Length: 476
Image 1: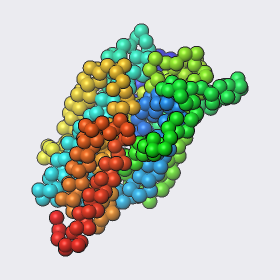
Image 2: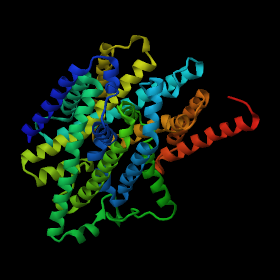
Image 3: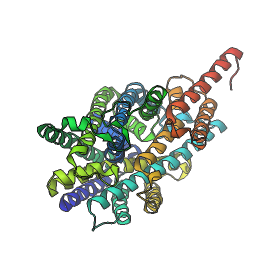
Image 4: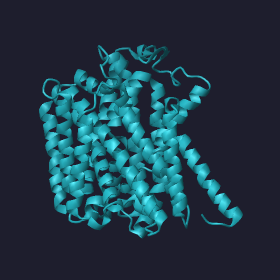
């Protein structure tokens, strides 16, 4: 098991060093020279969007809550399709025309006005803040995965340091080129894991006649409903809130800077439909695999894991020989790394382009990569992995939602408007971020995930200003 995992780490580090040879400029570091093909772009976007959430956070929720938590996967499939179908090509063409490297540059239309400068400031701060939270979540996931898999060899803190060191090293070496190359490897590992292990688990359940046992197993979170209950024991308005929350995670695909950078980096926009089919197919298969595996775990495992987010690791250790379990651990790390490296690159791009554009260089990019990596590592090391308020699912949910609210509606307004107004973009961003903050302060996030409600508020605000402008023939 240890040997398989070490070989995986050596492979990703080698890919990082190999990519460094082709990383000659800032544009190569941040956007891979805009030369991605459909396979690399789609697999990189898919793996990045899912992160350690796919192999730790989501299976933990499905294991704990039952089939009702799988609605998140349905939302992700719909959201990923919508993002590729309605955003990808428009964003690629518009950013290429503007020579924009980040969403901040795109939303500001590369203008020199005060409103445009404020758009870049708010955008940059949003990216750095939420991406650091996101990176923090991935390093926490690293600590959980390695300390659980190599108990007695690595404690939580050493696990965080080990994983963070590898991620920071290969990202600093090759930038987005190394990120995409490792993403393709990591997406393949994740896919094979979430096809092979669920199929084997389902075969065991059926061959042992335990399918009915799964159907009649109470959910660990509440004995009032079975794990196969589609609505998780909810009725009436509670079902609506359940769907709004879970579909909100899918809606948040639109506006994610780390995914948008793949759209920008595709070499030929005519290949986007091919990339869309690959990406959406990957997300669909992996979400189905996670659901099957998490439900089967209730009858296969002799005892539930102490931390529900480690259910896939527990299944791999229980069912598979050591060398194969090592590959599964590598797949979990792949899920974490494929996102953590992207968050680093996206945050570094924002810092360089939005705050220190006059000092852009390959050396500066690598320095900021190290700086942000050290901050996220420090946050993760000081985090209590058993704290229910700092689960991977919760940390990722907060960062994922914050980025979508900051960029989703403003980006759609810009893409579907031939002459976007930077003042409207700025106000829409601020309205969304304030609404999100109030949503949490008022405790509404305990009832429904904030993305869809905040996006509705932003959309209403944006359309109201446009309507006011047309009725009064004025321009804000």
